Each structure stands twice: as C-alpha cells, then as structure tokens.
Length: 237
Length: 237
Image (cartoon, rainbow over all chains, first blue to last red; front, side, top):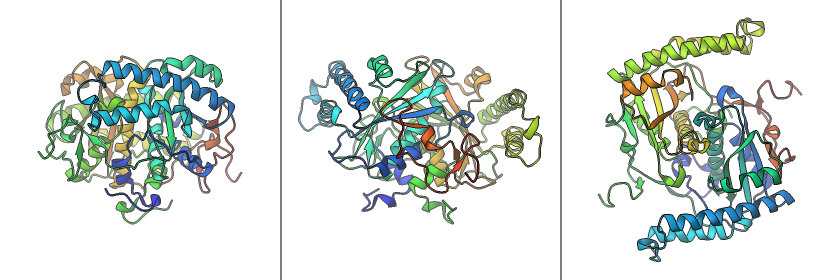
C-alpha cells in the first residue's frame, strides 16, 4: 500500500484500495494524452445491454468551459456553505485547527474557492430511458468509477460530486445539453497537490452479509493495515 | 492487452480495459480468501459524503442462498425468454450457429439455465435516502464496479444484472431485507470458463465531447488494437 515511484506500476487491486477523493490540484494542466487515456478507460465500463448511454463533456479552457466552471463554482460554494451550517463544521472539532474535521473543512473551502481554476471538469451525462429509476445509474456510475481509477493510474486525481444540481438548467443551456440527457455527476480532475493513499472506510464486516440481511460473514475481514473512518472501531483497537 | 500468466500481475489500466461480462462459470467454488478480497475492494469505493450506504448480501450454499437462487433463476429465465422474443434472437443472424449474436444467445441461454449452480451471487443493496433519484446510484454502482474489477484481479468473473426486478418483493422476504433497502444489482460470480480480454465498445470519440454537447474532442482517440462493437466503424476500416 506504499506509494510507488512510477505511476505505471499501480496494480489493479492496489488501485482499487488507494483511489481516494482528490480536491486539491496543482496549476499544471492535464495533457491530451492523459485525458485520452482516462476517458477511454471510462468508456470501457459496462452498461445495460452494452448500450453505452454515457457521454462525457470535458471542460478545460474553452468558452463553454469558462462559463460552465463559473456557474459551477457559484453552486459549489453555495452547497459547501450550506453544508458548513447544516453539519456544524464551525463548531466543536470543526473549529480546531488540526482535527480531521477541521482539515477536511479547510480542504473543502479551498476546493470551492478555487473551483474555476480546476484544470479539468468532466460532466458525466446519461441519456434518459427510465426517468427516476435507480438502475439508470448502473449505466453511468461504473464509467465514472473507471474514470477516477484511470486518473489515479495516470497520476491524476479527482472526485465525484453532485453539486451541479442547483444549476442543472443553466448548465444544460450553456453547454447545449439536450433535455432528455441528465448530468449524472460532476468530476473535477487535476494533478494532486497531495498524494493518493489508502482510503478510510467502515470495517468490511459491517457492509457485507452472508445468506440473508445482516447474516454474519466471518470470512469478510479487513486486511492488516486497513484504515477506518470514525464510524469504525477506535484507533489502536 | 494479452492475457497474463499470473492474475496477480494485472495492472490498473489493463484491468479497466479487460474486465468484461463473464456469464459462464466453472463448478469450482470461490474461496473465502477470494471472496473477502473482492468484497473488501468493493467497499473501498466512494459514496456521497463517504456515508457508505451500500450493503452486499453474498449468496453461496446456505438455505437463504438456495431459495434466493431458485427465485432468481426463474426470473432470469423469464427475462431472457422475453428478450429473445423482443430482440429477435431467433431470427436472422441470431439463428446462425456461429454469428456473434448466436454465440451471445447461446451463452445467455446457458447462463440462465444453470443459474442455480452459479457459485456466488451477490446482491448489491443500498439504503434509501432519496427515492427514485438517479444520483442514489452514485453511492452503490461504483462499489459494484470495484467488485467486478477486483474479481478480475483474483481470476474470477461476473456480470452486473437487473433481472432481480420482477422478483424483488420475494427476495426481500426470503432474505429479510428491510423495506427501505433497495436491491440495486444482482452480480453472479465464479471462475470463468472462458477468458477475460479487451471489451468491445463504441469508438471513444462518439462518447466524449469537449466544451459543449457534441463538441469535438480530437484528442479522444482509441489506442491501437481497440475492439469495437457493431455500432463502431466497419472492420478493417
């Protein structure tokens, strides 16, 4: 699980375990070659009957991109401000400078403040077949996950967000997205300022059952070195 | 893109490009170690605010599994029979023994006929927050994709299906799945009878736009050796 010297060497299982949300990007632009590799890998994902209803609108520096990033930046800042209020990021441990919550808040604030300077923003879209059906997502979100994994393989980082929702109609208009196409996710991408590394999740035994709902799966063990969210067992436990 | 001798060596980008739907499984059971690795990797996926609303019910040989597989087998056979009628799998090239369509039909028929003998069936579930919202899928389908990719890394194969839908209520009852939990996908898994290999998709330029809807992205090129679906350019073109 340690960082590799060369991005080319990341193994499949290691990549799955160490692709985390990246929200701080260097100014360095993303090359055409990297973008091509990342988008190509995204489109290798499965979809219902291999119909491939996913489409990716890539925003860099063009006129559409500048306008859309500005609209998105406004929406992201409003969404984050709302979350700060709702989730009490200014109270308790959120106010302390070095707590995980405070560091998360600082990183989020920088992410939304600098949104317009995000090197690449990808809008993952999907042609609508069944309105409002959960399973519609099965034909676009696997491709989004492939995109994020491929980004990690190429030394890039990104995060899947839904903060386009408040400005969905504006984005449709500015980017000429048809009415029957849904923006399923907004994915900022760039060269990470920090590093990748093991993600934090709940213990796998809380998420995996056998034979029935809440049926124990004693084989479902976290490998040594797994890092847990605060929802997991206490540190050192 | 050639097959590797050892499954351990699959690289991240290669894994993304060569994880295809596997519907034919050997009788060989899936080991606890493989299952643990695959489910653990699935749970590394991102979800909204890292809330991890995904839960996986793993069906092998227990009483719940036997009953659920029987219910699912019935549903899968009915769904396939319907598709054979609707999509004309018995007419034209579907009737010819060696056409891609006929081979696909044969593989699907075997898949549903043998469904009860599928070594592992995973039900990917998600706790309901916003009913009927596409973005709900963003917190479960990335985990399903991780699961399929990890399966490929461990020498297993599987496929994401929605053919549980007609028997959703029965499955909830038999497996004691709460009413506010949705079955988002049914994922059969096993040791593949055939091999993995490059997937077939539409040319990437049809799926990726820049700066606006249908804006050309000249950098979005398929690497040499990419295999296309019939929706792509003619062979040799």
